[in-house]
Amino acid sequence: MRALILPCLFACLSLGLPANAAQASEFQNVLVTDVSKDQISIRSNYSGETLLLFGAIDTQPYGEADGVVVVLRGPAQDITLRKKNKQFGIWVNGPAYRLGDLPSFYAVASSRPVAELLPSARRAELGIGADVLKANNLDANADAEREAIEAFLRLKQQANLFAAQSDAVEIIHGKLFRAEINLPAGMPVGAYTTEFFAFKDGTLIGYQIGELPVDIVGAGHILHEAAYNMSLLYGIFGVALAVFMGWAVAIIFRRS
Amino acid sequence: MTLIGMGGLVGFMSGMFGVGGGFLMTPLLIFIGVPPAVAVASEANQIVASSVSGGLAYWQRRAIDIPMGLILMTGGLAGSYSGVQLFKVLRAMGQVDLLISLSYVVFLGVIGALMLRESIQVIIAARRGRPVQARRPGQHSWILRLPFRMRFRRSKLYISVIPPLIIGYFVGTLSAIMGVGGGFIMVPAMIYILRMPTNVVIGTSLFQIIFVTASVTIFHAVENQTVDIVLAALLMIGGVIGAQIGARVGQRLRGEQLRALLALIVLGVGVKLLLDLVNQPDELFSLTRMGVGG
Image (cartoon, rainbow over all chains, first blue to last red; front, side, top):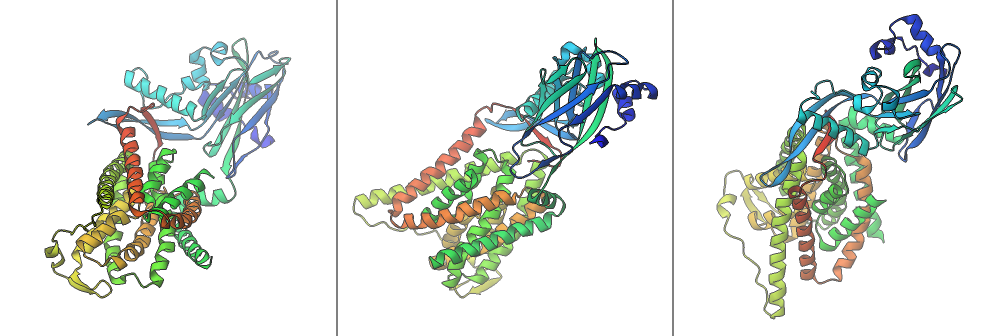
């Protein structure tokens, strides 16, 4: 579990956190964090679960924290978003938008609404809040593209893949915290990251980042792998299964 | 559980009415929210199972014209390949769902209307106590006299291989796009165009459907990764059990009423698909992962 707590130097640099290595490690030393599971295993009957993320805040350097934010982020995906329009009396897919490099899953748990904790410019720097995620090739100022980004967020929320819960982190005496994030049944697989932020008066005082692998396991894993990596064999297997079942049924019902 | 139940229901209907279930099952899967591309490919996989169990009975009765089946199959394999390629291209353009829906609206509408008309005519005629005259097909004999003629012993025919190749190709394409066996096109085409005797028609149709839907399954698995074996297996379980029960119930019911009922179901499914295209959807936007999803 300790392996989850990785050096954050690289991540800090990319997030606009303090570039100074000494300061970065100071941020890390403030937070000791852990997750209730070190990996998520999706079996064929997986129906979702609640993940517990918790930690302690060292109050020595900066005092007690008054805000904690936990972000769980799924692997990035390139997405095509299509809008239907009416042609010849029927609704068909029309304009397509390519949304590059957006997280497949994004959940924010915080002790207070994130908009109250930080101004949106600062949230954009830290990557806190789905509303500040940027599709790298869309212009948010154009009406049509803004509509597309809003549709993306709406669809992701409807699928329970994007979520923000502003009362899901409990801070105990400014020193301990625990957060709960609900994982839905249909979550995408891959390498997830967990990020922990502690704030005092709107200033970042602690930061940690870790990894959380999400994988399909069991028979589902074999089929999933085969479908994409050995697709010819997978197709032949499907046909063989069908031939066998068709034959078996014909035999069984002839007897009876 | 729902899927086994649906497989059972459609299997029951296909056993009762004596038709393949693909053209009802695929729309039903789409209605419950299975992505159309996955519904088509997985249903093709299921049809392999149902045509094997159906075909075996005809094999034992020697009611299959194998040379004819092989020629239809050759056309069918080529057709299924081009159908899957078309499917792949339209999928990249985001239009494959439209292609599937439109194909269904057209075919279900036309076939449902024809079946309804015929069965109503028969019912009315039967009420009036007049014998029904079987409609004689038009003359297509010049087609059968094209070059490359071959002798088909079991069908007692000496005809060109070009028409069965073309019919096979056409039905193979439909099979790939719609996730159907295509018996509902193949059987009338064999009777009215090829003039095959009715006793070998269904067996020969099932024989070639096994190979064509098998190739559709494999092509879709390779090109589009849209075959869901778990889904197909659940449908197979429900489908085969339902078909056996349906066949027994079907024997006790009157044929023409049964056909009128089936025609209404077919039309109903077609109208529902059409309404889904015409009415404004609640959500205009949809997400697709590049290269994956459907």
